[in-house]
Image 1: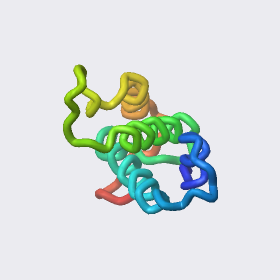
Image 2: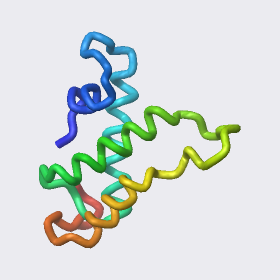
Image 3: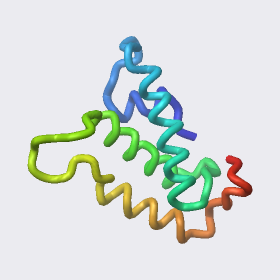
Length: 102
């Protein structure tokens, strides 16, 4: 399971910096929900699922703007996370989401 500590380590944010803890926790929950809704699968403490969560959280954390004047679509999920989403959706290793529950 992806924790606040794991995400802060992944993002290289020191533990004593706490001003974004609530935001990061919200992003973790949103990423987990996004993966479940996109794949129909839920996490069973699988490192691939956790990596997908980390990639999505990092992307959302680093690209908080709704619009960017920069060329390219920064709002799109990176290819690595998209590939993991497809893997999770097709693999039998992850339990199915039942009746909208986690």
